[in-house]
Length: 390
Image (cartoon, rainbow, N blue to C red):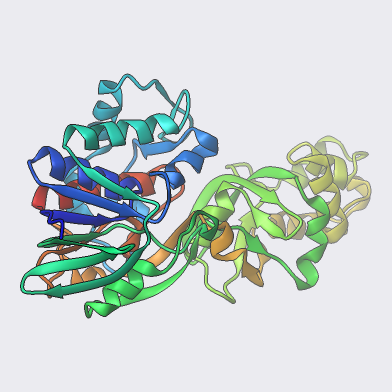
C-alpha cells in the first residue's frame, strides 16, 4: 500500500498551491482528482484569461459566518506574493478594472505554473481517479482510489463546492466533512444570475441590454454594469449582490448613478420639447430608456409632464425594486456561499479542531469572495497556509 506524508483531494487552485508548497518543503505529496486534467475551473475563468487575483484584497471583500476567519491566511499570503510567482514564471498580465489582474495570454499559463511548482516539489498525481472510501484510524487516513488504497497521516480536502457541476463539481467536500463530524454552513449559489417573474417579466424584452447601475441587496452595494437576460438579471453588479441575496429579498437598482439629482426636471427646464424617452436616452441605452419611460408614464414631452410626476419618476429610477423569483442555481454560479464551518477549523493552518491531520481549504470552506479575483486569492492563500503547516 503506497504511503505518503500528505494526500490532497482536488487538483484545483487551492489543492495545487497546497501541494506545491508542501512538496517543496520536503513532504511526499499525492494529489487525487476525478478529472483527467488539473485546474479545470482555472482554465475557463476570466473568459479564458484567469482573473487570478485582486489588488484590493481585504477581509471585508469576503462573506463568511466568521468575518475574521480569513484574515490570517490573506494577511500571510498576499496578492503581491502571487504576482511575484507569476512574474517568476514569465507570465505577462494586466490590470483590467477595479484591481482585477488577468493573464495577457491564456489561463492555462496559471495551471502550467502551478503544476511546474508541484513538479519542483516532486508531487505525485492520480488524475481521472474518483475517490471511493476515506477512512481514519491509528493516526492515518486511508483513501481508496480505483482498486488501490493509499495512506497518509495528513489529508487535505480541496474539492471545492457544487458550483459549475458540468466540470464535475459536487458536494463531496461537505459529505466528507460531515463524515468526520464537522458542521457545514448551508451552501447556496453565489455570483449567479437572478431570474425574474411576475410584473418584471417585461424586462426580458431587453435581453442583451447592459447599463452602468448601482445594485443594492441587504445593505451590500455595488456600482458596476447590470445586464438584462432572457431569464432576468445578470452582469457584474447583479452577480455581486447575488451573493447576499436570499429568496424573497428585493434587489434595488439605481439607474441614474452619480451625484446629479433631479435629472428629469433639469432636462425639462433645458429642453421642454424633448420627450421623457429622449431625456432618459441621454443617460441609458435607448431600448432601456424606452421601456422605463413607458413604465413610468413619462414617454411624452417633458414640458407637458408635471414636475411632480417627473420628480417621482426620478426617485423611482434611483430605487427601482426587483424581487427575483430565484437564481440560475449552481449550474451558472461561479462560486458557493457557505461550506465547511470555520468554527471547526484553525484560521492559521485550516486544520480541523477535532480531527488531527485533516485540513479543508479553498471554496470548500465557508469563505466566499466578491467577483473579481478574490476567490482565487483565497484559494492561493488558504492553500499556502495549509501547505506551510503540513
